[in-house]
Image (cartoon, rainbow, N blue to C red; front, side, top):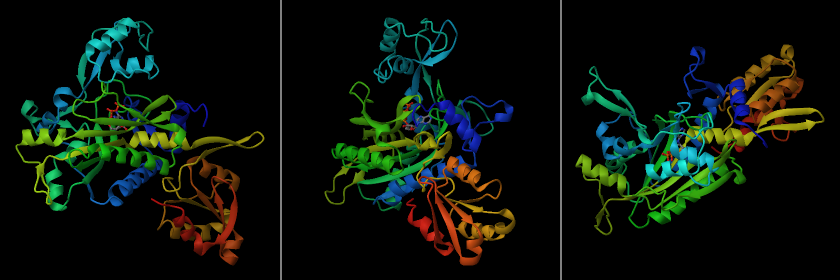
Length: 459
Ligand code: ATP
């Protein structure tokens, strides 16, 4: 929808039960959000779609579910304890805190990202360009210090440094530490991939833009292990696969673009990194990162754990540490993109608009709504139909209000089909099925409804 604002999306999500403010009755907790009944369904459908594409349909692909709290040495080895940090800068005038690179990115409207710049370079750019504080407008900042994003907690009854553990900052490390296990138990052969979906935690300096940047979020990460020097080819493969997936789940092509990281931005171990960005209401933002991580992760874990993480090639008898290509996407950012992309307010007659969510049927919260035309006469049959359909799909039932109003409500929450139960159903075994997008109605046999819907759902 043109001119869609984040405020509109936040209100819409709250009104219909997609996403609520976290801990709302206690005044909320800054930037924490809870998924409501409809949001939970869509989120599960997104995860199912990803799992199908990346685990089920890929040959040599394995899924795992690792622990959130891991041995703290994992995070020492991966480099997170030393350098998983963002440049923190304070406004001297109003005392607000900011991420220096994001200040620059917002100030230059995305022309400079500040990614990969050292503190000196960031400070110089801010002072040379008199970058203003977004809160008070003054340009009077402290120097930059690095702020570590890992959440710390303690395990067990004592709270000293020996009991310190971290909430995982990404799901990827759970995959690397299980590389040997999956290789052995899955009898895997290079190239192969391991994927995982789960929560990650980052003490972000400036969370915001609804569920775009939060301190607790979900990731769908995939680590693809390949032979050294085939990594760039595989990077190209996964870049394409991720973009195809986003189009398949319904995102409009014009709202998606690749952004290749410049050599300056690239992590020291990466040969290539590409972000797929989505055009959110606040502007283009990273949705999916596809990074060629070379042999960095397995090498550091091999060194720190003193456990061999090499692959013995059965054909050449060569032993090597595999290279890794990592496509990593946030469930919440994808959820937000899907809602923004699908939401519309359509004028359907003069002075008459409807709210509609054109989300693809496979991802919709409810696949079908069962609506008795007249409660008094048709609800008994309608409930029978609900009982049948709900064994196959998420089905909703609504008997209150005029049929027109009920259709509108289903349009607004993205239910692709409404079936109306009337005298014809009772006498002839037929129902009217209404399509959310075209608003056209057709009569089909009740016994064909399940097949009709199944044919139109692919995840
Ligand atoms: P950004 O530059 O926006 O902070 P990142 O490059 O640090 O993101 P990655 O570490 O590559 O992100 O994480 C992979 C994916 O996880 C991102 O592409 C994004 O979809 C998601 N993600 C990362 N941080 C957050 C967050 N704070 N809230 C929600 N999703 C996130």
